[in-house]
Length: 519
Image (cartoon, rainbow, N blue to C red; front, side, top):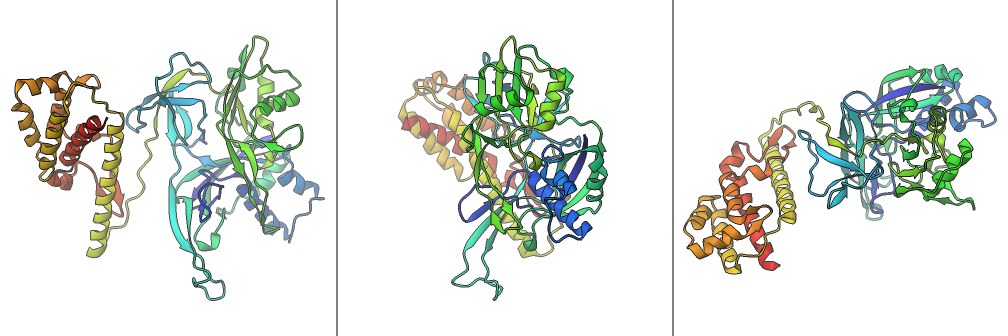
């Protein structure tokens, strides 16, 4: 079996509609589904063969597009900086609640499917990312999205009317992102499929007539041997543990033929495929989703069915359980469940092997700079928007900081109220020296209250001094914002002139004091 590696770059936003959001919005998946790629290849095949419709009685048609044992079109996930196909984040990965993912520094991530002895006190899932192991550090990627607002138009009049003018929203994958897919096929079909991919321009997803879906095939590579997880099956043999990680959403049916999102059915699928017996699962980290799609031939949506979410992990442990390299290869090549020809049911065996490891956000290359704004009104508007976005980010950082700061008992409400009042007065000009003067002129009894009261592992007085003397330190991780060619940072020239960091530091002090008084 051969693998055709397909690299795609979005030229326009792509609308691969999922079942998220409210009724007046279409929210795209964070990847390009394999069913969408298969549909585009089918359209090219029909054009090449000059067919008005496909005949399922044709053996080649069945083999190329409808037989999961012959050809499988895998989901196109984000491509990493190393030009590799990333994978959905395992649901067994957790971080400390207060640890923040950044580009320039790594945090510790714990894999609960391996061991849970040294887990953090307040574990929290990482969120929706794609990952790649690079030099021992896991790099995390997230798809960029674009939200556009539209309104319904009367097809005859070409505009909205009082009867047809509802507002709706598209939340699509943004343009200029690169994705990578793989088409697994029999050796005899590789040339046929490769010939269908020679034209670089391809249209994917919905609303193609409204400026969505234009994609370019920028690379096609045929491989004789391809491993989805990048680690050989021989290196993943284990004497007493079998862990199964879902690399795509998986559709399974129970004994009554009903589609259900039950992770226990993974055990039944593997036992039937390999003719082995597995113990009951030791650990399960799973979630579910709804799967549906659209049949272009019928012009109708397909029924929605529940599925296990990509990233779900199930672990079997027993001294007698073991899969050899050939069994691992067979299981991963075939997949499990239904609609495998569309990329569902992809799995990896024993790909998670580290109890904890370092992870950071991928340092993505900067996109090309925007065209300069030539008109003064446009520039003023962009500057206003950038200023508001920057203030919004500072507000979010402030709320997050206050959320986990706890001021211990030991200081009276009257002292906290006085601190609030002076900080509010200092807010007008952003003069932190007003609060420092207050602290330095306190009588000994009041000063002792600030010294003995703890916030984290520091005295309240020490923490106040650090904030007031270095007001930018607590927001150092804040990223810049950009609108057109206008870029703003919390410590740029305008921010320093406006004393933005000082004002938000004073607000932080007021919020901490208010939180203590309220409690």
